[in-house]
Image 1 (cartoon, one colour):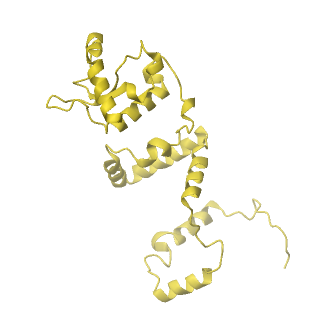
Image 2: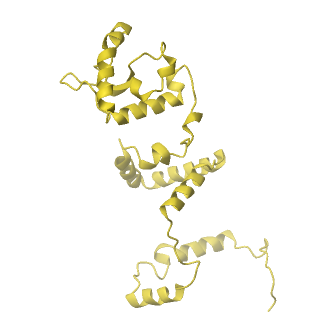
Length: 221
């Protein structure tokens, strides 16, 4: 028998009809093993056969290896063409199985998935000094990081907790953003307030400065 490297040519490729036939007999009810469960004896034979085969053995990752692998994977940037292929495949899957799509949607509704926030997010910047700076708060990456840290320190609760509390929680600059640029990203210059207690006028902000500073100082001691 001839040995060497064989290259598949157009002549020996399967035709579309052959591909369809093979797919039909190898998937679903067409497969002779469809619906059958392996006995314990069969499982034992397969286990013994694969024992020692390095290509069959699973690899257990340490915590450090998993973190390194996550960082390397998050640094990848996929082309728009690849993203479109994935997106179209997912849409097709949901369209063919609307019950599955509804189940997934219901399970994720209103929940922030663990891999979407903090250091697990693929867009997370490890060096926080590289965050975008801007005079416009909504475009300032360091401002968003400051908000998160202030809210985390205050456990995402309004620090004037009473019966009037209402609305979403907001991170408020005790000494204002415009007049004190050197304190914009100081955690101690922030306090978490609900929408009702968040000062709306400059005069209100100035009136509550001392009271807010006392609350934050007591919390950080």
